[in-house]
Image: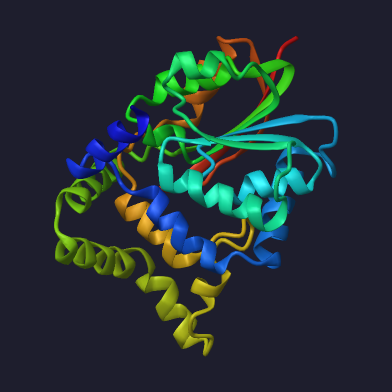
Length: 276
């Protein structure tokens, strides 16, 4: 039923094919990207290793961060609503941890309470740039909280609310998913120019053409073009101000231990610790 629901949403132009984009990203996954993903987890979690800790990856996407957590020693459970994302995560597991009982991958939705009840709770619940794409962000945020062990950690990233610009991007995203390939290509090119013409011009004037593109995503192991496609097409799409996320989880018994704000249309990163 989850597969059919996802396919119907995509066919109706109500959901971006995140998994198809991640399938393309897999072609560029190498040791340097994996190492960057590991470092980003280590820095935010404040831990060099994750042995003896359980790690839930909600919306695993390509599987890169599930892989990073597993390489750091965690027992990993990955799930995603998009069947192609599940396939991508399974492919990374096949490459690096074949038949590993400490890394499980399955199809599931953070909005499916029956599915979530079967999972139990985890020491680390991770969901980077996912919950705002569910179509019911606040329900997804609440459901993620229930999956965290007492004294466990919740690491999430949510799109920043920029007011009118965020609403304009909502229209772009809807048009992308409703439109034919020609419209999608036009929106991607227009967005590339709109978002990057200044830094790319600066790179050229400083005789370092392409510097911005090469540097993009190095802190997390991401890829410029795949991130651009994800940004322009990523729908459903919701946003929140940092203080809204902070208040929401404070009321649920979580204390924020780390915050990274983007100051623009990107994602704010939050690390919460659940009170015992």
